[in-house]
Length: 134
Image (cartoon, rainbow, N blue to C red; front, side, top):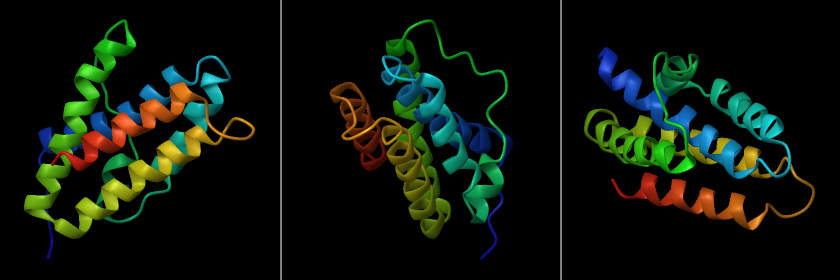
């Protein structure tokens, strides 16, 4: 089955996935926000299938806000919306999207030696919860 996403659908997926990496980067600022973002971004651009084709580009023109709370206000609902959209249109791709985002947040959290900080762990939990809310 071939699926075609419109531009708004693609923006939702990109905002969700790239925003999740941005949230992890903000939560990892005490260590190295740059390393967190780099590892998360590599995971997103390594995705395959329809999700991989969509996530090759970061979203353009998205204004995340000035605080982590404003960023979360956009990204967490976008994660849920992306899962709902894919669950309806292409369930296999919904699983692919969830795994891709999960790998990205895991990669981002592992940039520090040992266990992720409590802040990174809590942000990862919020992202996973948003993915599972669909």
